[in-house]
Length: 332
Image 1 (cartoon, helix red, strand yellow):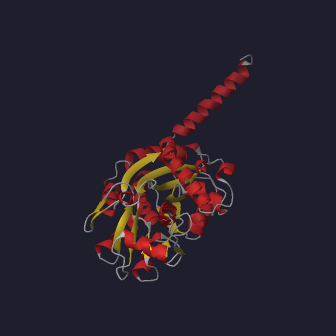
Image 2: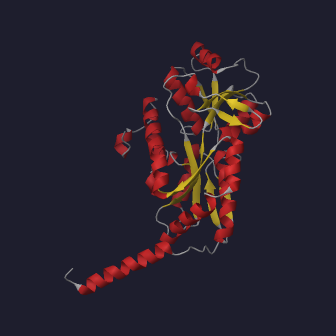
């Protein structure tokens, strides 16, 4: 470099940036996490556990605020529009950050956020015990005999339950009546109450109702059996439907990019130290039928991106996408 003064300034700027990135962030006021789903659902459950693990290290209260609506897009939008000072986070299923634009809900991308993942969830096909369906074949036969009549309750378009049912529909050709709620917990309660015959929401949202025999599980939407204490082992849908796609959902906390570098670096450090070693979150996952899969940074992105691609093309195949996945950079 021919200009020693310029070179010195560039080196100094780089040093300052590196120092800022490695500095420990000490928040001076409470932090808000916007959970864009109703209380009691999968996002709400694990977010509150993670917040409790992070509070002592940050030295500030973390306030969890539920803001449901728009299949999670309303609360996520609120977090995106908040000041980028590190004090407003959001949470949920990370892959939805990439699929919202397909439905015209929100102009977001996965790489608009710093990702901090905690668990991976799977869905269960369950029915109200008052229905005649004793196994998955009987349910699918009814859906074939009565196209678009059997009600399936989910947390809304692009929710985990919705994608699980759409995958079943694509694999078998059945048609169903989609009944949407503002979260997984309300969808499960609606099925228990008889408003819907079926729910395909996440295992963690159904566990208590399954243990109480208020829902009847027919299959786990996965390629491995799912054992839940007090319920038993639920067989995988891949045993019943050949060539069924892999449907998994990684959940966590997300901080919009543009916050000070020390916010992201401190969170990455705490995630590795506290969340990855959290006995409470590990126990929660084992008890509720989830997988304990903590990660952050590039590793988290590599977990999430393939599920964004899979879901984007599922939405396109279902005729729900308002734009082509390729047009917003989602390519197979």
